[in-house]
Image 1: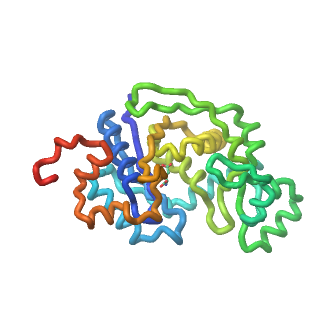
Image 2: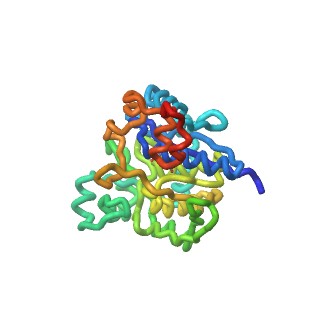
Image 3: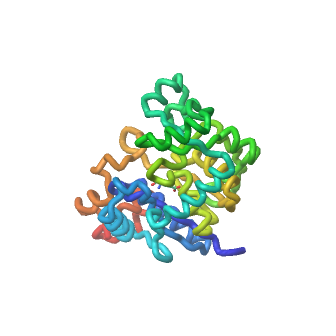
Length: 292
Ligand code: GLU
């Protein structure tokens, strides 16, 4: 069998927290147990919130907590042309259309319908515009989004599934993808030729990723990724969506909660070993008397 290739793909748009440490170290443990390679991808397409300083701090935090990676990290901001090419293919296949709706318009037209992330479901307002109106509004609008025509996409690719691995890597479940639940997702914007969904599938393919390990918060998004992989004729990796690290109130950790960032814990004197024990990735007795 070819060597499995894993990746950890954080965004440097805020300080990494215990949840990121868990995802990175868990991926590393699985990669090591399976003689795999592990790649680091810097998901920095949001060039306003992701700064070079943020990336430096992110790499330093990862190194400190004991995560190591093979090869130079891949920065998404170096690959906008690749995403633009993928978008162009979808556009020439007639599968994307420009949308001029504001957030508020979408919210009020969605009639309470939500996507799997709980955001208002886009009701398809701009889907049936004439070509003339589209061209004109694209020239005039300050901003617009490129949306995937999900009905057409599903018609083209048919029913899709993905392979979900158990955390101990011993079992595989075939999961039926439900991309329709997301509606016409945004793939790019007037001045940003990509989105998370588009760049993640292009990169996973370019980096020959065989196993995608990431948090359960992205479980349902995999349906969108499978559709894009099928439309762009990209290979299908296997997936493992791990449990999330929750705060004391049972909520998912977020980057806005600075108190639990790796940088803050490090400042308070935590050691990387204590973090691994806290995350139940290492046994307490592995620590020596000094807690090191
Ligand atoms: N960049 C995403 C995040 O930080 C993860 C993307 C992925 O693993 O597919 O949440």
